[in-house]
Length: 176
Image 1: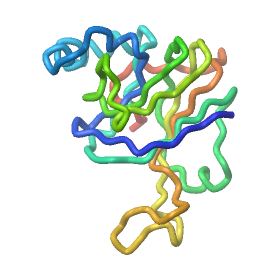
Image 2 (image 1 turned 135 degrees about the vertical axis):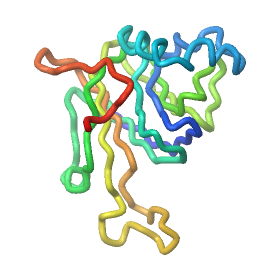
Image 3 (image 1 turned 90 degrees about the vertical axis):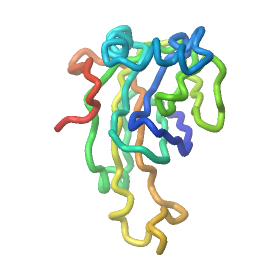
């Protein structure tokens, strides 16, 4: 198992996991808008296994753990505070995957806003867990921020593909 942790922000209401090849030639807002503004463009990228939405319809900064393992792994503590799990998606990696707010998809990576994750070249099964870390006693400071040792807001799982999984091609990431 390999994992990385990073706080990532968005002002668009959507984070995402993306293959860097979708950002080729995206160097301005006009380029970005042409490629990623319309849902139809995003749906096509989802079908091509190059983009996975993390569509929370909420702005802000959240802590992510990106976990690469043969199968989905949650600790007992994480499972206890699991709020919900996303639909399953597929993403193809050429050795690097990025996680960021959708507005940070650009050819030139802004490292303060993008988590770059080294992976094997593979097609991964992706699911995202929302963790309700605030429910864990002692993990919220007086100002409402997470205490040291608090669980992350989200866990992104990149797992080996299995045959018995239903795959989503929707913009709405989480089951309702």
